[in-house]
Image 1 (cartoon, each protein chain N blue to C red):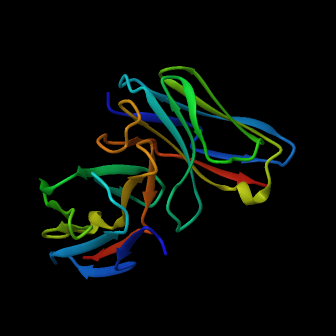
Image 2 (image 1 turned 45 degrees about the vertical axis):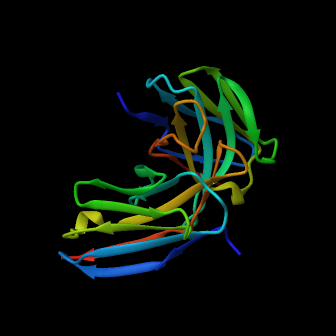
Amino acid sequence: KNEVEQSPQNLTAQEGEFITINCSYSVGISALHWLQQHPGGGIVSLFMLSSGKKKHGRLIATINIQEKHSSLHITASHPRDSAVYICAVPVFGNEKLTFGTGTRLTIIP
Amino acid sequence: DTEVTQTPKHLVMGMTNKKSLKCEQHMGHRAMYWYKQKAKKPPELMFVYSYEKLSINESVPSRFSPECPNSSLLNLHLHALQPEDSALYLCASSQDGTATNEKLFFGSGTQLSVL
């Protein structure tokens, strides 16, 4: 069983819809990363959070350490949000991240 | 400057070739990483350099040889690769290597094809 599980694996939505991507993990952590990868490869770090909630523009990330669960929300989704969203947690010491399998999001105009 | 710059963006090489991938950052970060990513899979960690010393080698075959000449530069030397080594190679950096509480900055990657 992967230590980091994401759902859904694929998500297609209409422009303007509210999007939720979920991440569950089985190990004890003190922080979780949300990353975005567009076609073509480059990865952008969206959030790193250890408790509560963070907001950046239309993106909101929440984490519940006790329940080992995090969500990434996108409000007023736009076609440019189409990308793969990956959550990652540090395990086995501080330098190594374990990645989820990613959620492929497609926003249709 | 919050960029991690990787060159080249694309590379095609034969199994007998020797080539190098380069990565550069000027954010003063002291930890630098190489990841390998196959299509539709998450990145896999290959190497970590912390303060210019190799701190993690994830049992990577010796045909991949990392080098950190200084705190801003990271190279990955490639020799006698196999077709299954074709992948996107991503470089990343962070402040000092504690992924627990540091943001990672990624380059745009080198798409490598081995013929």
